[in-house]
Length: 161
Ligand code: PNS
Image (cartoon, rainbow, N blue to C red):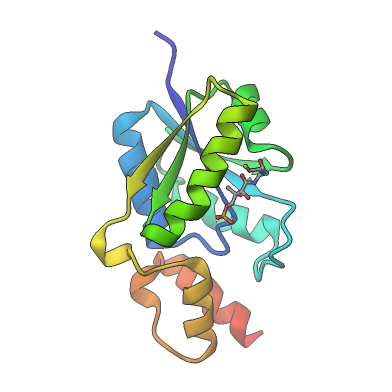
């Protein structure tokens, strides 16, 4: 039987425990999950693409059902070329929903065959975002419980450097 692949796209600057949770729960629904790491973004990431990729690779090193790819163009094209059945996204709250719904409609308009599946973030992660984690860390706050340990170490080092 054909393997069912889901694409989990994002900037992941950096990957948080919320993202990790979505990947793990995605694996209960799909045979494989591919993290699609956005290359070209206007967000001026703190971690370069190669750094973000290495951090994600390390996170899922022991999980052969998870892979990582570079997203440089239309997400639906990426998903089509990868043979994915779905795009996977996490939803933290109503403000995410507004933004996500626009993307769903646009993506569906571009590629009606590819569904987007949303997983509600766990309560303890519903307030966590990469940008908030960076802001708090920059100001000296403790964000260690929101990041995988190696990513927390990398963030602290990046902010010190
Ligand atoms: O983690 P983010 O920054 O919320 O992820 C946004 C992302 C990368 C999923 C979105 O910007 C995207 O899909 N980019 C690829 C380009 C594209 O297809 N844009 C049109 C989306 S309707």
